[in-house]
Image (cartoon, rainbow, N blue to C red):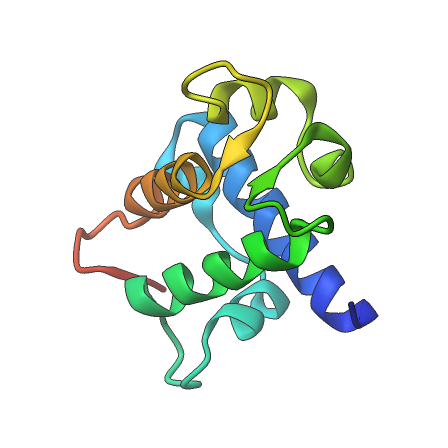
Length: 120
């Protein structure tokens, strides 16, 4: 994986899981560099569809053994044990793509203060 792609994945995941952990939309303010990574059409906002596509690619990039799920060792640089456990909805010790996407999309919804499907 290219270092720039890995860095973008790590930054995006840290931002999102920090938002979830803080439980407040006010902490969802993104730094410009993070926003630039997510704003694929460069219109100045991160649309829900851009975010979803980025996070689906992030899942694939994080899944180093390509087994379709994330194991703790694959995400230890991105998630704390508590964040991993909170995302592991069925407590089976791995994150399915559905569990991962449910969490990050819930984080997006929490960060979308206006409810318009965009992060400013």
